[in-house]
Amino acid sequence: MSAPFRICLVDDDDSARISIERVLVSEGYAVSCHRTGESGLADALEAEFDCVLTDLRMPGVSGIELVAQLQRELPNLPVVLMTAHGTTDIAIEATRQGAFDYVVKPFEMEDLLTRLGRACAAGRRGREMIALGPVTPEAVDGPSLIGQSRAMQEVCKELGRAAGRPVPVLILGETGTGKELVARALWQHGDRRSRAFVAVNCAAIPPNLLETELFGYERGAFTGADVRRIGRFEQAHGGTLFLDEIGDLQPETQAKLLRVLQERVISRVGGRETIPVDVRVIAATHRDLPAMVAAGAFREDLWYRLNVVTIRLPPLRERREDIPPLVVYFVRRFGPDLGGTTAIEPEAVRLLGGLPWPGNVRELENVVKRLLLMAHGYPITRDMAAAATSGAQPGNAAGVSGRTLSALCREVLEDADRGGPSAAAAAFALLERELLEQAMASSGGNITRTAQLLGWSRVTVREKLKLHGLRAEATE
Image (cartoon, rainbow, N blue to C red; front, side, top):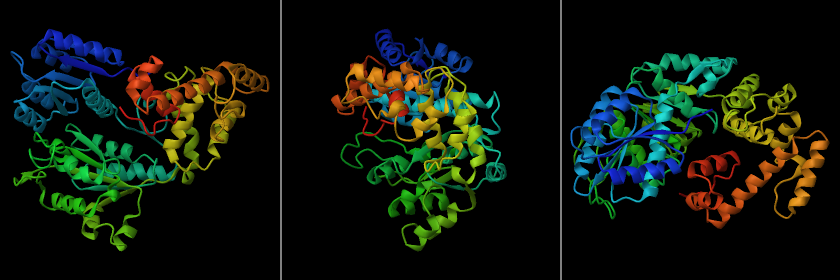
């Protein structure tokens, strides 16, 4: 069962520390509090945390000294700084030294929670070693590249050959094939594994903001640029930068990326200073880059720079023999969190193995999670798998709307009597999804308001949205 994110909170202000701790605990975080930098540093080095949240100015060991020490000892433990107006230059320097992010007091708690969520997720991923090979009890505890097919064995061999080379790597594959997993494996098995791994999804950031995200900006560079911020290249200095969906880069950003690869320097937006960076770039895309080059949509010189080592990930339909071990892996990994079952009938596995899976491994993972919710602690049956993959819930019920509670109960009981999943499991899954849909509609897609309506934490709401496939249009 996955543990809640653990945060080491360091602040000499008792009132602020207690207030922040109360909010974090209510959001589902496990928090260890410290009044001094010395005790916080000792705890961070001794215990296992996903993130450190620290004030900047404290007696004794300051926040910037905490960052420097942790960067030397635990470079992949994210540190988020809390700083007052007038000390942002120090915070920027701390970020250059390895701090993950910072917030300026007085800050909105929603802003802090958003930044902490990203930091904790990055810290957890940084600790999870990517296992290569068959499903083992050890591999179930973390992310794994599962597959004994010839195609996946070739991927693993190429990964091993490329991991230690100081050259760019280009990962090609359809959406959902596991490109970021391969990128993290390259980092973890390479000679930069003790330094930062920074991931940027180029398709998820608006084109007009991507340049500032990658290269940072100077104060006054544009309206709203009140303080200087460093970009992802500077954050990844000495480590690895993963650029996902690089085929979505605009021509101007492509030109700047080419300069970084050629000259190993960057310039912040609105700045004149040339800043040297030592970064290994791993790029990935689902697009056909050679076709884009031919069409003039992607720079040919950038393509040549990136295409030093290429790893091609096969779609799931081309390695069907890997589907059964993938299903077993997902059931064992997520079962304890999603109802308690770690069992699935062979007939259900065979049914899943015969489907086309256009969304590849990601789609298979989401379907298995849905099945675990439907099973409600009981073994997953073939009927459940058929219902989950046909676009209909058990009992041919697409939802709850339009039916009375009595009618819903009668339908799921009749379906259970015909050999379908347990009535309670089916009803709970349907009602939970309907509650989420209506709460999201009522709140205008706001996660915080949805959490208040349902009496859940924001963390729980985000997890349930993902499990029920209702994540679109959600805001913080």
